[in-house]
Image 1 (cartoon, rainbow, N blue to C red):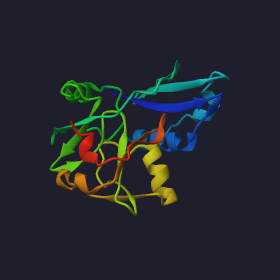
Image 2: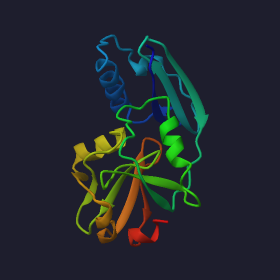
Image 3: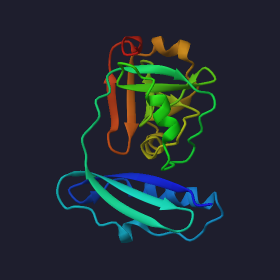
Length: 197
């Protein structure tokens, strides 16, 4: 059965940002299905030369791969609604995001949701998160999806992994979201409880 996946890569003035991390995830995803024939993304991607774009690479277990480029506009994210979902699984960047979209629809007046599994916060629908405790930036040990920016910041030592129970959120001073397009974006330097709606 054919399964489709995505890589979303930031393109700035023709440069494919942090491409090595996207290549690694692309290969890791296919390898989990026993596939060892990989395309070198740097050899086939042809981004626009000027401006900020979202490169969307759609690939599948049957070897198909397409690329498209879309001007990027950052989504405003100043409020989050906690949504419990112990059953959602998104351990790979699947092209099918229906389960995430169903949860996103529950956000009411909030900008996005913060998905909670077994009492622990995980991700928003489009980004990993990190919480600042006054000393360290902590990111959930069990995210829904191990994002490329998260991986890069863990490897650099900037982030540390930890379980973050929902009841501990109010002890953090700041909250940030991160993904390939926004990099690391602090969305509040107030008490986190002030952005939970």
